[in-house]
Amino acid sequence: MSYSPAAVANFFLGKAAQENKSLTPMQLIKLVYIAHGWHLGYFNRPLINERVQAWKFGPVIDSLYHKLKCYGDGPITAIIPMRLGAESPVIDDPNTVSLLDSVFKSYAPYSGLQLSTLTHQADTPWYKAYIERGGRFGWGTEIPEEEIKAHYDQKIAANRVQ
Image (cartoon, rainbow, N blue to C red):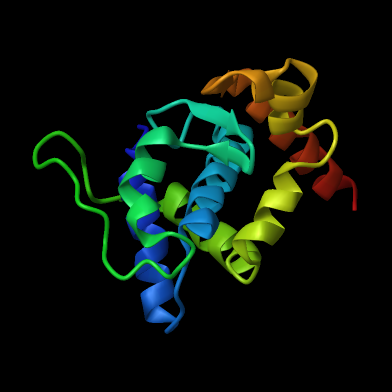
């Protein structure tokens, strides 16, 4: 089962609140993207039910960006509203919850710009879509899920070797 980006974002906002932390829109969008990548790699299915786009500051989920842009670069102060009945607000798969907990623990300490820098490295899915395929000349260039999955498959394989 895949979830709305807002449901995943709200999971992370809940984790941050439990730890008395705040997240910025850039941090939150990158956390959702990174979790989506790891989920594709580990479980061979998407975490979110929307496509990821290559924007100037990295991978972006368009609907999430528009729900968060009112915060600018400041902290997000409320959960993200969801359409009643149209989106499941609860992430109840134990494997997915465990993965999200791990992503939060590993990546939430980084700033939005640091997370953006991670996604801008050569050979990342964003790099291929934005730099190599010229996404910087258009708006909303999609990052193919198979490229995201392949990237995180490589990261999983590298972690197993270490």
